[in-house]
Image (cartoon, rainbow, N blue to C red):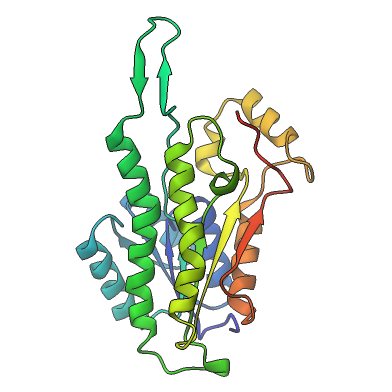
Length: 260
């Protein structure tokens, strides 16, 4: 799919980080882009900065997601590209003993459920809503109607201590990629997933400098964090290359995460 003014895209988690970088890259190519994000202040600012439409949405809500897609489509028309970058993370051991008090603690189930709900179910909710709209489009070259790019994590394959919920949620995205691609194999909608490694995002930038230095040094090559623009570059290639479908692609500088 050529990336130009014919692209109508929705980017979830588009207010910052990987989503914002990808949205900006699409706008630069002439695409019409809607940013979906729960953070209204950051979303409005990002939309003004890059020249996109902002739609505030909580991807945990069917009604909210449907309303956001309706707003985006009213402004730009039916999207033919969906980039899923919305997600959350929290680290907590499955069960552990507090070193100071000796108290045994268990992973809070409400936290586990929320992480899986946002990352796994929320991603699927957006895929389903967007694909339903893409099915109404006339097929283009090779019968293509649309492209969906999801964001997993290397934690789906080598999660660290405390990442059971996060790894499970990102693993769900990995596991659903091929079945969804097969669901649409006769409808011209491609589905791929990127697994980012350690990236220079607002969440990571909040870590202490010594932690960031150690993480950067652990990347085989190049020994630094990934840049959001590098994620955006791969996402755009997944849109362009029509033979790329049902794939899981690590973008990580060859890192394999240690237990901690």
